[in-house]
Image (cartoon, rainbow, N blue to C red; front, side):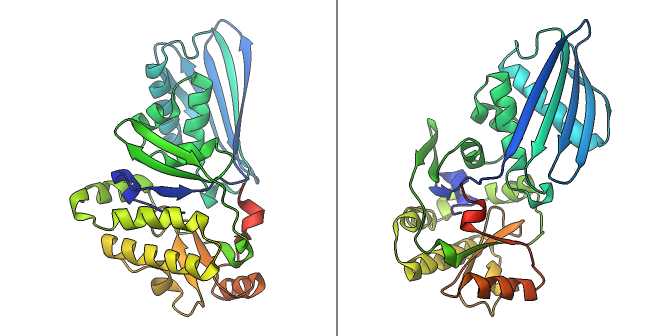
Length: 295
C-alpha cells in the first residue's frame, strides 16, 4: 500500500495480504526417470504447461510458452543451489499451480510462486527471492502473512512487523483494476540508479506508512495518501495517478506497487456506489471493496 520503490533503500512500507492467492499441489510417483510435469491455471483456464527433466539441473523438454518455461527452470535451479537435496528422489513430480483469480490482475503471482517453491525446497524464501528477483521482498512477506504488516529492509535482513489494520472507514476504499501491467524489474532498475542520499522523502514516507494503519480519521487518511503520492511523484518525476487519469475524482487515488501498474486504491468521502459508478463510467468496470479481497 505504501513505500513502493523507497522500501528498497530502507523506508518502511505498509503491505496488506489478499484473500485470493496461489496454491501448489505436488504428486510424486516413484519411477526410474526424474521428470516434472508442470501445469498452471487460473480461475478461467490452464494457461501454461511444461515438462522438465531433473538430473544435475533442471532441463526443459517441452512447454507451451518458452519465456515462462525459462523463468521456471531458473527458479528451480536457484532453489536447488540453496538446497542440493531438493528433488533428489527418483520419480515423476506432477506439479499443479492454481491461481485463484484472473492472473492478468497480478496480485503477486510471481512472488507467491517464489514463496511456494521455497517452501517446497525447504529454503529461505527471502534468499531465493534475492537470487531470482530485484524487489525488496515485501511481497514475499505477504505471501504467507495472516495480517497487514510493516516491512523494512535492514542490514540484518527483512524486518517484518504484523499490525492490525481494519479501518472503520474501509467502505470508503475501493481497489480499481487499471490493466496497465508494468515490468517490476525494469521499474526497479530505473529507481535503483537514484542515490538514496538524495531521497529526503524516505523518512516522511515511513512516517506516513505508520500513520495510515493507526489513524481513525478518514480525512487524515486521505491527506496521508495524497501526500505520499505527491512525494513519490516528485521522486519519480511523474504525475500522480489522480492528476494523470482522474483529476475530477472527489478524493484521492494511490498507485499500488510499481507506478502505472495493475491496481490503484481510491479513497473518498463518497459512498461505495458513487465510487463504483465513477470508475465504471471512466471505462474501469473491475473494482473491489476491502472486504472482497483484503485478508
